Structure formats: C-alpha cells, structure tokens
Length: 283
Image 1: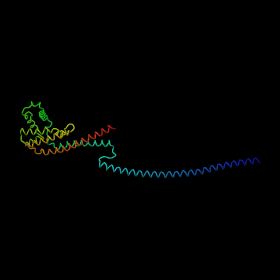
Image 2: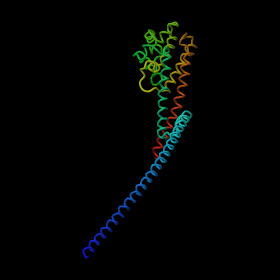
Image 3: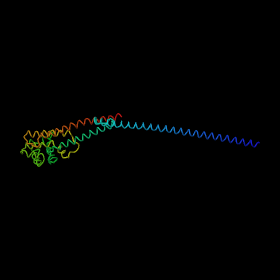
C-alpha cells in the first residue's frame, strides 16, 4: 500500500514538472512569435522611413541643383555687366584689378614703341649713336651753359663742325633723304642737323636699342620738338616731301592719346594699390 502511494506521488510530481515545462515552452513559442511579428513590424516601419528620407533627399538635391544652375546664370550675367562676380573674394578681386591695370600699362608702352617704329623714316640712319653724332651734340649742349661761351667763336657753324657732320651723315637715313631733295648751304645744313637733336631716343626705340623703361614725358617732349623742327624746316623753305610735318602730326596725335590713357591708368592703379595697403594696415 505504501509502495503504491509512493509511486502515485512520483507520478504526480512528474506530471506537474511536465505541465510546467509545457507551459514554459508554450510561453516561449508564443512570445517568440510575438517578438518576430514585432521585429517585422519595426523593420517595415524602418523601411518606409528610409524611403521617405530618400525621397526628401532627392527633392533637396534637385532643388539644390536648380538653385546652383540659377546662381551660375546670375553670376555669368552679373560678371558680363559689371566685370566681376559677386562671389569673388574682395582681396582677390582687388589684386586681379591691379594686375589687369599693370598689364594694360605694359601694353600701352608697347603700343607707344610700335607707333614710334611706324614713323622711323623721320629718325633713321647709321649716324645715330656714332662718335661724330655724340661729339656734335655734346658741343651743342655746352652752349646751354653760359660758362662755356668763351670756348666758342661767333662762327658756331665752324666750331660745331656741322659741315663735317652733314658730310658724314648724308650717306644714309633721314639726312641723306632730306639732303637729296635740297641744295647744299650752311643754312640748310644747320636745319638738317636740327633733326638729330630731338630724335636720338626715338631712333633707339625704333631699333630696339632703348635701355630701361620708356619715359613717356621725355618721349612726348621729343616728339613735340621734332614736329616743331620739321615745321621750321618747311617754313625755312626746306623740301621735306615724304617726311613732311603733317604726317609727323599723326605720330604726335597717337602718342598723345596713348600717353593720356597711360597716365589715367597710372592714377587709378596708384589708388587701387593704396586701397590694398590700407586694407592690410587695418586688418
């Protein structure tokens, strides 16, 4: 009887244990299923959210591209109208402007040289830069100093050796041409000599022998003096033919135009450089 009760007790414990295990297992199955359903639901929500974000990003990208294109068109139109872009850095814009003006100045000086070369027949010849030319010009320059008056007699034509210089110079160039169109005389020789006085630098520029940067003030003065010299030749009865003063006025007119532009640019350039220096000073 006791053995049967013991067996029944053991069976009861096993039954309870199996029931508990079954409940645990069933709960696990239930909650696992619920968990999977929740995960799938969350994944679906996440996928939809990503699609929404992606769509929004695509719309933003499209708008940005449209704005970028519009901005490019605006900058192109703005730069074409005002010469600079609103997005340009101020310092870079100033440096660019200064650089452009410097380049323009260099170009103007080159135009001055080319203009002088175009009228080289008024100042050509191997006598330019010769020892005889340097000597006679040196003597003539002495006359500007009153202390040197005693060195010369009343016959400056003889003292300056003008006849000797003309005989030397008339072998080629400007003096040869003018000499061939006119008769020989002391008076004519003095006038022919005068064409040398204001044209040495012009000859050097025309033959690419000018040293240093072009001095526009001196060049302008030389051209004006040369024009007046040729006018004096014509008024004195010298036949200038192709080398007439009227053609030489074209050289003067072009040079005056270039000089005016150069000095206008020079003033603007100096002001821009001053602005740049002040900006650096107050930073």
